Length: 206
Image 1 (tube, rainbow, N blue to C red):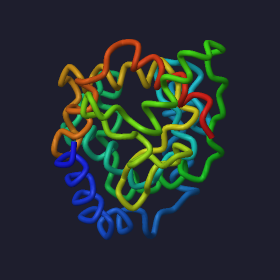
Image 2: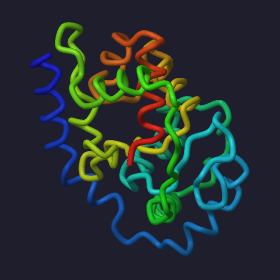
Image 3: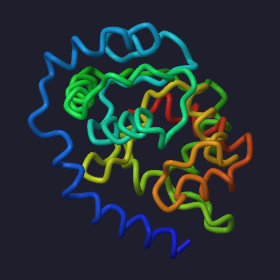
């Protein structure tokens, strides 16, 4: 647990300067135009009409730049986006990321199951020391806003189906673009109830 937290701190420090540089000189208007084809899955302003695809509205630009570059360059496999970014330059990606970052984030309603939401809140805010789980809020902030300087994503209001799918992908090692395997290590310790609880808590978090 201590080693994991130390890794998080070191990564945050290393990314601090680099992440800020990725979003400078971005053209939001150009990003809006370039993002038009993305609307079918992610919505006109980044609020997805389907639980299969993530909301992008209000997401940290630095995180979006990292993900889009890695999808384009083969560092992250997303079958639904095969070929979608082939024509995107680094500047196009910065522009699109800046556009989505400026949009109003989605707000959801958590599952009415109080026990489920309470379990998600506990994991998110405090983690689970016995299982070596750090608090999610350490990297994603208590409000789920994320940390742009470290390229840690915003999670509040995210689609539950997508959150669960992402956690499963990390747990199974199918998604492996997390630095030092941080998310893979954490997600592998989560059971299905944990994932459902976190996803529902995050949906209503703001």
